[in-house]
Amino acid sequence: MRVILAPMEGVADAPMRALLTGVGGYDLVISEFIRVVDQLLPEKVFYRLCAELAHGSKTKSGTPVRLQLLGQHPQWMAENAQRAIELGSLGVDLNFGCPAPMVNRSNGGAAMLKEPETIYRVVKAVREAVPEQLPATAKIRLGWDDKSRCVEIAQAIEAAGATELTVHARTKEEGYRPPAHWEYIQQIKQAISIPVIANGEVWSREDYLKCQQVSQCDDVMIGRGALAVPNLAHVIKGSQDKMPWSEVLLLLLQYSDYEIVSEKEKYYPARIKQWLKFIAKQYCEADDLFTQVRVLKKTPEILSLLRSLA
Ligand SMILES: Cc1cc2nc3c(=O)[nH]c(=O)nc-3n(C[C@H](O)[C@H](O)[C@H](O)COP(=O)(O)O)c2cc1C
Image 1 (spheres, rainbow, N blue to C red):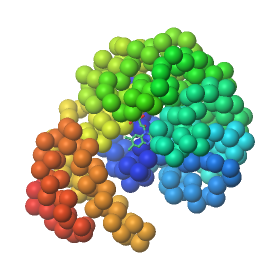
Image 2: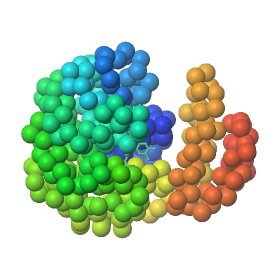
Image 3: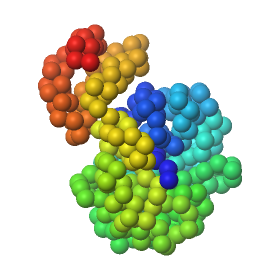
């Protein structure tokens, strides 16, 4: 089995990816998406959203990172995929599930689920641009507002030559509302022969085992659960119990090492508040801490509070 850290724009950025893969258990990470519209993007955009490119496309602890692109124009997607590879990305992942209205209005992300033919053309163009030995992969939701074409979409992606497919088991309209419909992943898995990775609502080992049974997939991608329980990859693999709160506190402190003062002065205070909201889903102590931290604006104030608790 593989546990893959999900792409999460604005949340799982390079510092968070470094921290979580440092805790361990991950086999692969997908970067936040890079939006491709109608140009070959400058190299600095690639490095900004996937800083690991400068380090062999691996996090500090050595976990491989695959860069994700989002866009609907085959030619521009292919050119940007080629640039990603030239900069050292270990393959390219394609996002066909983003629900952001801005992206959907210009027919990108989840809007493409209405047009399996366009998905086919994008995957094919990118597959041809990425050297054969490197993966060209895709990530989908089950559809825009109904699930009736999910198998057709998956078959189009396979026919276009994708190496593997991750399925977030909900439609765009279902957003992030539980439950995830893992049974549709099984239908997809039966209909195609490339590896399928299950995604959606896995917060514990019990969830994973249920998802595995229903979807028939061993490989899983975890997103919000990975933020809520920092060692969830190990928990899912059965090698560790859920991390105690005292260790979570130490990680919150350690995260300050990644403060990027020059470019993002408020990086740590903003991110720690955001992260605490996810952690609060699994640790009630995080709720109390958030109440105390939310009024603090400066990194040293937050750190001294955390040190007093740790
Ligand atoms: C804040 C946030 C940002 C996300 N950004 C991306 C993204 O950049 N690319 C993508 O393919 N999916 C993105 N997703 C979707 C996740 O990768 C994942 O499919 C979804 O959260 C379901 O998995 P989970 O239930 O384990 O969280 C995002 C999700 C969240 C919550």
